[in-house]
Amino acid sequence: MKKFLFLPFLFLVGLVSGQSLEGAWKLLSQNGKAVTDQEYIKIYQDDYFAFGVKNVADNAFIGAGGGPYKYEDGRYSETLDFFTLNPLQIGTTTPFKIDLSGNKLTLSADTNNGMLVEVWERISEAKDDLTGNWVITGRKRDDQISRSTPGARRTIKILSGGRFQWVAFNSETKEFSGTGGGTYTAKDGKYTENITFFSRDNNRVGASLGFDFQVIDGEWHHSGLSSTGSPIYEIWTPYAIGYKPTK
Image (cartoon, rainbow, N blue to C red; front, side, top):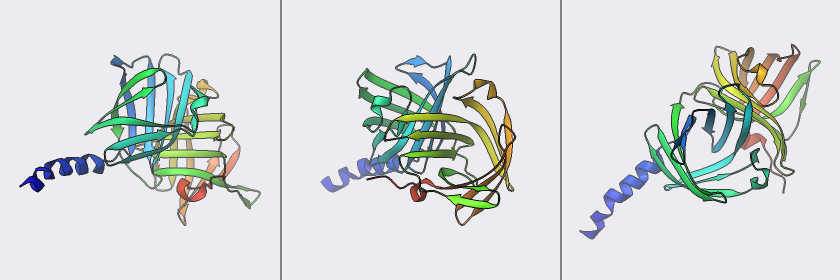
């Protein structure tokens, strides 16, 4: 009889662990206070996360962070590859208490600044041909393709739930080069970005950029004109394959 007493508990643990975080999320409250003056968008995909923060009133960029996360057996932790709000925390791993119920996510942790409790709401978990976490590994110039192997210095682009965010950073030196993000669509070989935040120039917020795309042998070939009108051709590889950590 005692054996069966554990079955409901094990079932619930399995149910919670089986829920996926993948998709795009918006921060609703922090330490019990509603978040209204700033917009936090967080994307989870392929065991990686990234978030960007801006002021709602003037679209001014506030900060960004991200890195690998682990969510298994009811346990959740984040490791920071980049974090503009406090670069000294890059490389650290923080365990969180997690409560995931439908499209509501509550994360709580004891941090250096005291207890942190965040409540997030999932915006979307939609997927398409480009859903994934990518790292740039190639460019074409004058019909010649040059390839590279990303190390500590790399540029990633994470897409999930109809949201995207790119980030350029160096996880060893803790240098941050820039980030931007927003909503996107990818259908029938056409990829369109609608910028909602941009660390280098918030005047770009509201702009839409259209590109062509193909997925060839598992890699994303991205081509068109940049925001300055220059032709671009980029090759993005799934992060888990393209990124080679330095030892």
